[in-house]
Image 1 (cartoon, one colour):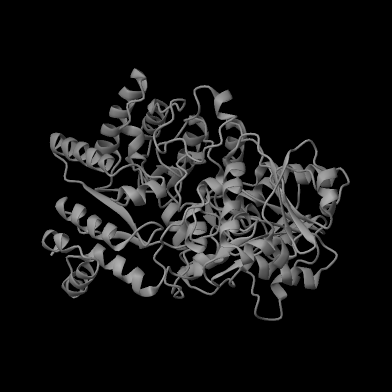
Image 2: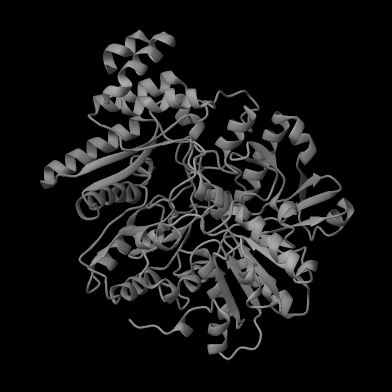
Length: 607
């Protein structure tokens, strides 16, 4: 497939001139390299505005250190500047769980680091506001979305106000941006100014007067959160906010949230109701080239290499895991693409010159939630629970895997496809729950067998996260007995089919509620199962997760009870060592740690 420069959104004045445009409507600044693919938010937003007839340019990874020519080169847009830090929060992108600077960046050419600043959204917005004070700025993406309220920032180890304050952006879009963006464009084209838009779902802005907020409530109910100044002084009060933030982020018909900071108010309008299947299909069916921009010719962008032959089947996740931001950004309601849209994308992929016949992932936030929703949606519309599967699978959840199997089989029939793999995480508790519906239960067994026999590339990664009941309960993850059951099925099917495949479990240390004894039990449990762990991670607090609120405050937002969390480097290292009990260099330290916590019984089992 051969593409011209004009098949991509323009990134330079020369590329704008190639299109014979004399004025741009929107200029989009992104912290990522420009990859014209539906897995990259900046490309989706750019293509969406283009489809509405707007003249859009994208400035990927602008240089913020020099004379700022990247910010000036395209001049002023007619409507607004748009800013996103990229597909990741810039601080997660830059630093490890130990706050060490990373030596690479998967979203940059050749994986090189330092192509974006810390707190990229704030930096970009501040530069634009200084250079073009009369042009409105719209901010969105993961970084802005998850920092829309007072939040704990792990890297500075302090509470930060809504990103609207430090960025000086005029309007913030949170979550997946198609619906709010299209509403904004409609209003602007009808003559409104971005400064005046206060009634669009899924947006946030600053108000000078609380009476203005209430007067302009547009029929929404409003909840007042604990104000920023109180949060700074009272960790328990700060923790209490999160319950309301999480509930309203996931409700079908949510309330508006208002938080005072000084003499201003952060107003966060309720989210839009989920996209329809047709709307999601339309987003994926935009004319993406599926390639990095030609400016990166000869360079490799690791994040692109990882997903270039993968297909995203749905949005949203109803797992509600305490450490995860997916539902905070995408919501808990699953929106699935049609089988036709998925098949069309794979057919487009097959035509790519370097496609060798293998689809690397037919997945999503959780691979096996495709087409799952409430049996009675009226019950879902009044639900306030953050998870549909914790502490157990909801009686009202349709867990039938047949539509997903239909997609797998349709993809595997496409000429040019040799095999399709599932690289995204599997929720095995969905497969192991008796839901009292014969068709669904049959589909669970059928899916498990088909997954293991046809869609595993030698190793299947799954995420039990821990073995301790106490830790798993706080994580909102199923009991470890589910992992045992799944492993038994995995081993049985492999034996029956003459396959030699591995399960690769993923675990987290230093998560809130996790103590040294829990890690010792984890080591003992996994040793008994003959695992030498590879996929492990220290808990990293990221904005707007339940676990992060607990890490900072010491309180559970829903109960306001105290929860222990390992914080010091020594505590974290003591926990992490248990992953590697089999390494000689850690055995003496583990022995001393178990003596210190009076768990001599575990020394024999482990060492």
